[in-house]
Image 1: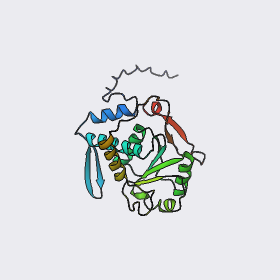
Image 2: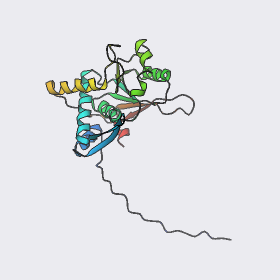
Image 3: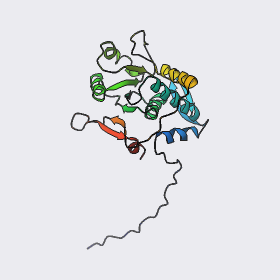
Image 4: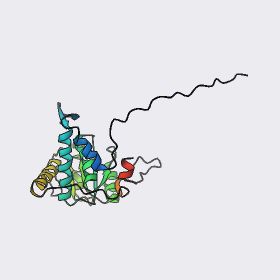
Length: 220
């Protein structure tokens, strides 16, 4: 018989937690500002590499949230789809901060599935990257969804095509004017267990199910 050798337990030191804990989205935004002029993102625009500082990203979030509020999207569902970008992440954070329900969507979905999911969650706005410009033309022109705002990050058309089209930069400008004229403060997070996100994970049975998450879930 062979006796298995007993190994002594390895006592490894725990990794130091560098980032402070965020309990909700307002904690996160405050911590973003703490890093000031350090670079948070490097990304391509065409062949050119752009950079964005933490301070600039915090300002973008504030303007985006104020824009959503001015567009009366507080308490409404805001979808986002497309390639990862500072604008995508800004949309996610700003929607939570403005009191919206964020609905991130899989960019590999067919347009028909996207429209179906938008109807299921009763989304009032969708922000999308350049790759979806042409895909949404038919949905916009034929009024296939209840979406009130189609918001392209890199627009190939504007509100002369349809009044429901508002570019991401126009949302930021709307928020900037709101801040300058009236001021804008994020609404307080009074209930961390209130629904803040609606997520469609990949469907193992052929159909995606909608999962509802709260800020407590997101920041756990």
